[in-house]
Amino acid sequence: MNIFNIQNETEFNHTCLDVFKLQYQTISVYKDFVDALKLKPDSLRYYKEIPFLPISFFKTHQIIEDQAFADVVFSSSGTTGILTSKHYVQDVNLYQQSYLKAFELFYGDIENTCILALLPNYLEREGSSLIYMVNDLIKKSNHQKSGFFLHNHAELFDTLNTLKESGQKTILIGVTYALLDFTETFKIHFPNLIVMETGGMKGQRKEMVREELHHVLTKGFGISKIHSEYGMTELLSQAYSKGDGVFDCPPWMKVLIRDTNDPLSLLNVEKSGGINVIDLANMHSCSFIATQDLGKTYLNGTFEVLGRFDDSDIRGCNLMVL
Image 1 (cartoon, rainbow, N blue to C red):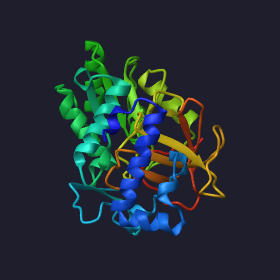
Image 2 (image 1 turned 90 degrees about the vertical axis):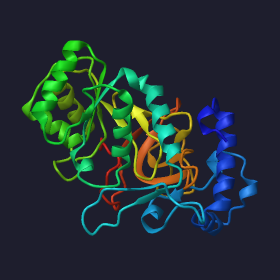
Image 3 (image 1 turned 45 degrees about the vertical axis):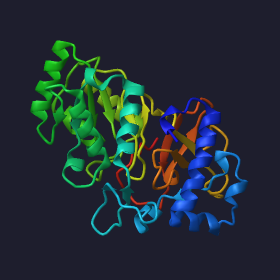
């Protein structure tokens, strides 16, 4: 099945049901979870009836097809002593297709774009799916100025000025605290620059509400909106926001909201609750995941992230507390 050719809700529903049946048959951890809920897989007719695996299973189990081997293992960030998530990716080509197609859907041809990355905490550890993606985007951009910047903010400032003067389409992807660190020392007016924050202070700075954070960053870079990426170790797809914290998904990904008091029940649009993600790129692990994030959806399929469950670990997925 080609998940990247989905055109409408009917095709999405059929693909979800096919993927669910496949994963029920081939991933014993997921099968045991579904069986414990006393569900009959053959009776399901709609993707909203599919059970969502709690994301914590990625910390305690290998979520991969039985007898399969992983091309790559991605791991989440975490402080010492905290159990981290591991995503055993059986076919890394699916990940590559997912992020490239989504990037081009939201931002156009990668070869017309200079990609700059300010992701120090991700670069300083191993196993980051974000670094894997951004590194590939940098290579595919084929632009001589594309690249990673660790703590060399002066060099980044000079690079941004050069790109501004040449009128080059540029995207700066950065972890929140590093973008703030940069704007405290350097100010630039680059109206056409796209700044994409990947969320999280990573314990480096005091948390800020989204409006305050985006106000500081828009002033620092001389732009009107801050873009955001919503992704995590346990997913092979990303949602993107082009401003105001409202995210949109590619056609093979969807966000639903569950009742925080009854996790098997879904809520209507504009009701706040736990974020469930359908990520069909997770073909060989689990495509139906109940995250620890809180949010709400809108009638057009977009969503906002409102926070996290109080008892969940602090880790490296996008979280902007409103």
